[in-house]
Amino acid sequence: MLMEEIRTKSIHPEIRKLLSFATSLEKVEEEYERYIHSTERKLYGFTAGDELVGCIGVEFQDEGECEIKHLAVMPKHRGKGIGHKMIDNIVHCTRITAETDRDAVLFYKKLGFEITSLGEKYPGVERFRCVLEKL
Image (tube, rainbow, N blue to C red; front, side):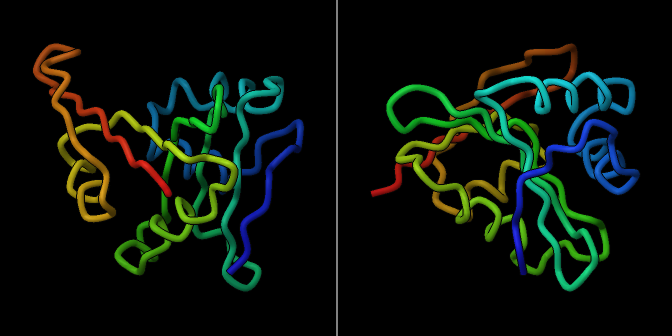
């Protein structure tokens, strides 16, 4: 499996699909533009053979801290450790954070992230802050 940064000006249909799993369909273009034009944000595609199986978007912050902005795996490839591998491939970060919903909080907990409830950030939607300290 191979992970590489995505830098193309136009959004590939498979990347559009993956990002739509991690954000609303209406926000895909806007989020993609942020990756292309920001020096702090990077979007990586994860391929198996010639098939795109996942993507991870990371915002690099000060002193080894980074935040996972988007993490998505194609439905037929879920449950195979791809999300874990993408997080493991984030280098130069000693502290990784993410904000997520109830659907994904167990995924982060299984990887050793400490979970804190942020309460109901949106009507009827509890959000969680996930933090992993890497040694």
